Amino acid sequence: MPLKSDKKLTLLWLQGLTCNGNSHSFLNLSYLADVLLACDILYHPSLPSLQTLETISTCKLECDVLIFEGTFDPLMQRNNVMVGKLLRHYAQKARHIIAVGSCASFGGMFKASAPQRNSGLVFNETAHEGPLLQYQEKVINLSGCPIHPEWLGYTLSMILQEKKILVDSLHRPIELYSYLAHHGCTRNEYFEWKVDSKKFGEKEGCLYYEQGCRAPMTHASCNKILWNDVSSKTRSGTPCFGCTEPDFPRANFFRTKTNMSIPDEVPVGISKRSYLTVAGIAKTFHIKRLEEKLIDYKTAD
Amino acid sequence: MAQTMKEQRKDAIIAVALELFSQRGFYATTIPDIAAKVGMSVGNFYNYFTSKEVLAKELVVYISEYLGKHIRDINESEADTEEKIYKIVSMYFNMAHERPEMIEYFLRVYLSNREIFLDDCEGMICVSAFVTEMMIFFDDGVSSGDLYDQDFFSAFGLFMGYLGGMVFLFGEKVLPDPLENYKESISKNIYNALKIR
Image (cartoon, rainbow over all chains, first blue to last red):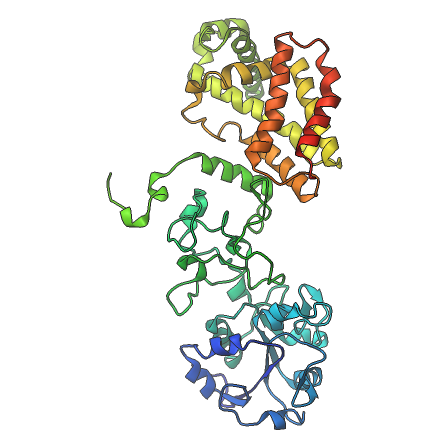
């Protein structure tokens, strides 16, 4: 990894209410060793670190990059120090603040225990009311439950190379989140012709109509940057749960909400009238090849 | 200007064809009949429609777009679901009065001579504008908490089948009262049948 300067970045990884999912994901980064060699890890709960949590909690050090994992709970302490105090101290001097995961970005899964109190670093879902609101210009949100390791790998690489990271209105890198999870899904032809998957886990059919798939409404690059470099939820037969969006988690992950058989939500940026027109016409046709099992495929009938 | 004239001629063919098809039926109406009534040569007719079947399909699209446009106006109005039902019923019954040939054509040709419409006009293809607006109406009705969430075609059949049946009875001169007199009771029946309980 070519670096812009010889000086290593000091990196601090703090946690709020978390399942450690993003830490675990990050450990799967294929070039993790390169990233770690370019950084001085002040503290990470799972990686060899220069400092202990006790030292970090004295609030006498500084870092270049502050990474926060988990939901912010204003009543939570680490080593008997309020997490809010730790965050504000390290955020002040940090050049970059990265919220890893949907909990740190928008509140996510752990917001549910105290929805009015808990939040992400800058956002409570889409409302600007997190503890680091005053530092929001420095905050990059990497939403996801968990994040793909490459998303953090990309962000740290850009920082190490002193390149500007363009973000959307929810502070997510455009390079990673301007795509929909739908883009690159191997089931796209089934979506186009409205051939629905009837059974959980089968290779054929689209998961949008009957299995709750939110890929057409979810900003994520899961089908562009594949998980473990080989697959994605939708490719393997599990619907997208929309885990990168501020309203995650929603109820009934495996059910598509419909009103009289009409999807309550349609793909991003498309009017319901336009969608229903195209979908209704597509559904008129019956494409034999798409209605059969892939294993029965023959080049000619 | 030339384009406008051509459009006017096309509209004239559509108006005459609707009238003749709805009165005499599809098979008993010939292209020379239509051309003569429009006041054009048979040869010139083919500059507008390449066959009687193509014309028949175009008429379905024309009626669907007419209905779709009016229902869209209702969908986009501030009315609540019950009011929208009344407006759709009124629009449909008014159409039966003012443009009876359109509903007659729909009932007596499109629904009765399905063999004409099998190619290129199956399913939603020709009636998309109308059915899409009914989908929007039902979707809005359920989203606003007014209508019971059920299968689309169960609700669609109840609504449009009911209206089609009443207009058919009206056309057969079976109804003792003018169609106008049934707007309110039918709207109420549809709302009561579809509303959330």
